[in-house]
Every structure is written in C-alpha cells, then in structure tokens.
Image 1: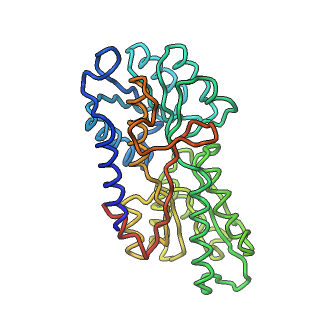
Image 2: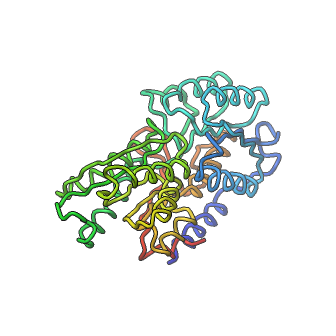
Image 3: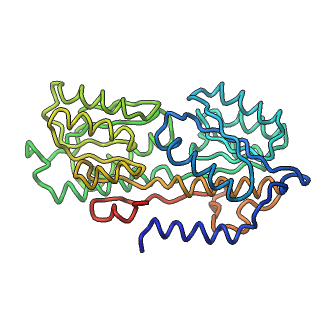
Length: 341
C-alpha cells in the first residue's frame, strides 16, 4: 500500500473515532482555543510541514489555533506564553526553543492551571515532565532517525565499493549538524556514525559544522567551503541532520560539478525530487503530519478534561514519560514514490 495513503487512512480513522469538537466545545461551553508556537518559522520542516498541518487539522476539528513565531528566542517564547495565559486559551501547544528551558514553560502553565502539550522538541531537564500532571509530549524517538539513516548508509556503502575513493577501507565523511543541544541533532549525529562502527567499518570525520537554524544556506556555505579546502577531494560521504541543510549541500556540489553520496532527514517533497534525480541517496521520514495531528488531538482532549489519548489511535509510552512517539521510516531510491503526496 502507498504509505502516504496509509497515513491518510489512519488519519480518517482517527477523525471518525475522535468526537468532533464544535466551536463551542471548550471550557465551560466557551470556544476551545489552542495557543501554539513554532520555535522558528525559518525552519523548513516546522514551518513548511507542521504549521500548516496544525492549522488544517485543528480547523477540521472545529477548534481555533493561534500559532506565533518564537524566532529562535526562548525569551520571546516565554513572553508569548504569558500572552496566551492572559488571553485564557484553553490549552497550550508549545514547540520549545531551548529543550533545557522546559521547566519555566511548564511552571507557567501549572500556575495558570492550563493543560500543556509540548511537541517536537523534548525537554532535556530531569523531572520536567513530572512537575505537572497536565503536561504531555508529542514527538519522536530522537535516536531512531539517526539509526535508520545510519543503516541506509551502511547498506549502500557495502553495495558500492567505488564510494571508497582512496580504497583505504575508511569512510571519510563530513557532517552538517542541526542545532547544538537539540535532542534530534545530537542523536542523529551520534547514531548515524555509530551505525558504521557497529558494522565494523572504520570512519574518519573530516569536518562537522552545526547550525541552530538547520538552514539550506548553511548547508550550501559549508559544503562549498569544504569542497575547496585541503581535504575537499577526500570527502566520500555527506551526512546531513535534516533535508534543509542537505538541499544546500546539493546546490554546492552541483555548482562545483561534484557528485557524492548524500543523506538527509525529514523526507520533504523537495528531497523526494532530489532522490528521483539521483542527487540524494536517501532520507528518513520525519512524520510531521502525524506529529501535528497527535498534538491537536491531545490538546483537545486535555482542554476538555478527558484522558489525552481517548478516542484516538495514539498511545502513550509505557515508561511514564507521558509521551506519544511517531515512528520514523526510511526513504530510498527504491521506495520514495510511496511517499509522494
């Protein structure tokens, strides 16, 4: 079955199973309003996938969602949460700027007695989630994306001996990393390379650069600089923490007339096109659509005082983390058509 169709079927089932929420279905008969943010509208994935789906899905459920841009500033997000509380929104859906600052947001929600759904960026502070009984998390298993990306790269490396340009049996790689300290960036960086080590393949890191904005421009600038550096001709593999930076790297490679194995994460539509054109070897579906839907479903139930997964297909982790985790999926030249919208 086409996996996109499969996801749509799942969404239809959930839409049927979750009672529709009318515009008057909020607290004490008032309008149900979700106060939400995106950590930065400059992020390809968050603004291009999650924001529109949050808006579309909430509208389909008959609730109002207000989404603001935190512009990559935790202080700005703190102020935005204060504004939402002053407006007396029914529930908060917050995409943290700094995963290490979750307790401050949770404390604000707790003091105001407003349920809180954190999404996409998981708190890194010990005990943060346990500090409030009305806070939950929607996201992924951060390590899973790096593991899947690494497994794809290992399989392809073994299948393509010519990729080892200097025939030394060592993978000479460069890595475009996302936001330092972000759970996804740290896990993807670690696990993607660890897959080679676990497979008994030696690796050599030629360069690694991080970008808090995960941007295409960063990918372009760093890849262009690496190609003209002293180690430029030694690069055998390009690892990218997300598709946005991968797009920039592809632009730089094309401008230099160089072709190298390259992998990303997110499975954005543009990435599927690059795979089809042979400019990208693989990516990992970061299912922002279902992350958005789970966030809205949990927010609605929380606002109405129901168990957050009631009437949905979502499941909370059994380890007490109060988290719904959406699985990642590998996207390769063999199956990318299944992920076309």
